[in-house]
Length: 219
Image (tube, rainbow, N blue to C red):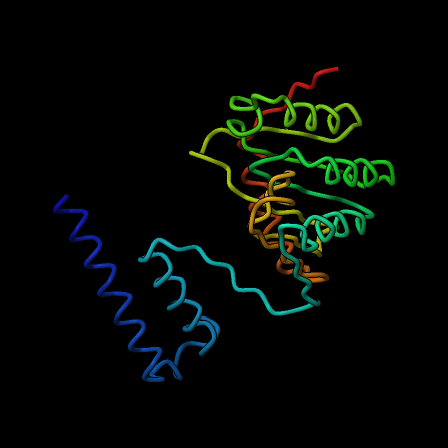
């Protein structure tokens, strides 16, 4: 515990020194090989992020935003609209996955030739699926040729994200379920045509996908 505290204090001291350097503008003579002022700023941000335990992604604002809400205020329709725009790929990360309209939209995308992948929370959709709706939804997708995995390495896989064609991201609190559409207060945000944002979420998807296990469908 003592060594952990010492390392933490040392890290904070280094970060503080670098932050002071950045604020004072004293990095103007930073070697060109390190990227000049921008290189120093990047280093400061990296150290500060490491010390605080963060690993953030800063991406430029791009494309356009579209929002909707629930209950019954356009949230589910916006999710379906996002999926219906797909031509090459749809990547889904979900906690609860029982929405028939979302499943149907993914089937349409699959039929158009888009590659559909989904990684969902194991406990919510398999272990605790008393109604059988989640397993049925996942089986429908898998039997249609979509790649489906479950993940159980976290307390819960609470993501509600869809990445379309490597350029559009849908996210928010909205679970892909009937309750989210008709009973809960939820929100959906879509950032259309922002490849940099999609790239960040694709990396997050890849991490969860690599930690998941193939879903065995019911025929």
